[in-house]
Image: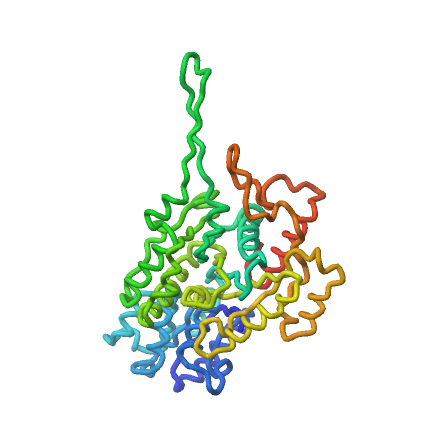
Length: 436
C-alpha cells in the first residue's frame, strides 16, 4: 500500500457519483483509495480502513441521503479520530439536515455540487491537490545494533538543514539514545572577580528536566490514554516537543524526548489501556502531521504495545540493516509481524537501507536481499561508516549539533559520508513523497 491523496467515502447507492469523482481526480493525476479495489477477502474491515486513512492525505465524503446509518459514518469518525482533513461533497440537501453525522461534517467547509457540478469537481480536485500531510517514518527492525538511531537523527537533520523542512523526531525507545545524543546541555558562562579575569562555566542538563516535566514520550502516552475516548479532545503539541534548532514559522528540528518509563506500557498495560494508547498516539501524530513536513519515530527492536503504537501511526517503515548473517533474520521476523491481520503495520510500505557495508565488500548481503521477497524495498544507496554517524557527540566545549553530517559546509566535493547521506536522503524522500 502506498500513500494516497484522498480516501473516498461513499454509499454503494452512489456508485455513479464515485465514477465521476474518480474521473476528476484522474485528470489531475491524484491518487485515491477506494474500498472496491483495495479490500480483499478475509481482511479485517476496520483495521484496513484505519490503515488506508493513515496512508491518505484527506477524506472525501460523498454526501447524499444514502450515507445516513451507513458505514460512511464509521469512516468519518475514524478519520476524525486520526485528525484527518475531511472534505464533504454535497450532492443533495442532506448536508443541511439535522442528523448527527451531518452536523459533524458541517464543521468542515463543504463543496456544493447542487449548482454547477463541473466547477465543483474542479474545486474538489484543487482542494485535494493542496492537501498534504507529513509522511511518518518508523525506523524499525526486529534486531538491535543496526543503526536505527543514527539513521533517524541524520536523516532528520538533513531534511531540516539541507532541505529547510519542518522535522519532528519522536524518541520511542526506552533507552532514549536519540534524546541523549541530540538534547544537548546548555553551557552558561559568567565572568566574575576584578576586571572579569576569572570566569565560571555552568552546565545545565536539559534532558532530565524534559523527562521530569513529562515533556516527553511518556507525557504523550499518558495523555493519549486519557483522551483516547474523548472524540473532541486534542493534544497541546507544544507541551510535548522541544526545539533542537530552527523555529517557527520557518524550518525547525523538534524532538519528543524519550523516557525510560514508557517501557511500563509494554509490560504492565491492560488490553484496554493498550488500545487507548494506540488510538491516542495515532491522534497525536495525526495532529503533528499538519504542523510538520516529515516525522520520524525512533523505535527499539522489541515487539510490544510500543511498537504497535508507532506502527499504527506510520505511513512507512525504514529498516536499516548491517551486512551480517542476522540481518535477514530481522527482516523476516518483521515481515511475519507485518503480515498478521491484527497488527497495525500491515500494508505499511517498507524501505530497507544498508548501513555500514565495510564488512561486505563483495555485497553478499545486498545480493541476498535482492534475490529475496524484499528486493523491491531495498534502496540503491548505502550509508557508509563515518565518525559523522557516531551516536555520541563531543560535549566538552560549546555543545551543538555540528557533529551531525548535515551540518557544516558541504562545499563542491563533500566527503563520502555526506555524499552517502545525501543519496540516501534523496531516495527516501522520493519514496515517502517528501518534496526536497
